[in-house]
Length: 140
Image (cartoon, rainbow, N blue to C red; front, top):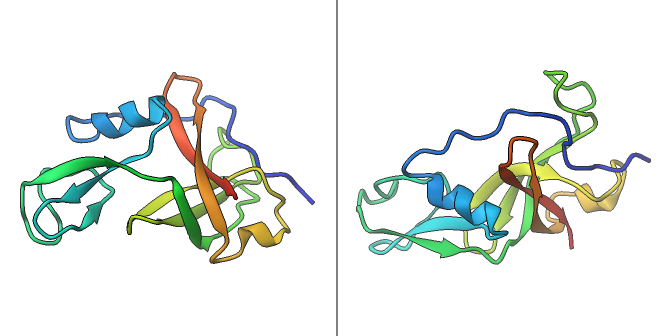
């Protein structure tokens, strides 16, 4: 039984763009933000200038509840870079608002049912060494 934890070492942080800065500002404030198209109502996670579904430029920022379920998950025992501490569990989280977030699951055991597909999770935030704050998922 091994507990999954947030990364603590100096890992590479994001390089915010004019489109993603609002997302990273939200993370720093403990708020998970995403865009929604005012025309077709598509939820958009990767910050963009136009809606990937209909091409509209009418994207607005919303705050997510931070609640979702595990859509896909794996456990990494041998990281590709020494900066990451193993094990860690990268996962695709399906959020209540209809979008997907790639993150890691923390605060549970590697052999627990909490890592099952469909398991409920919530988003929590942890700082990186360079001052950025990133979202993680934990069981709820």
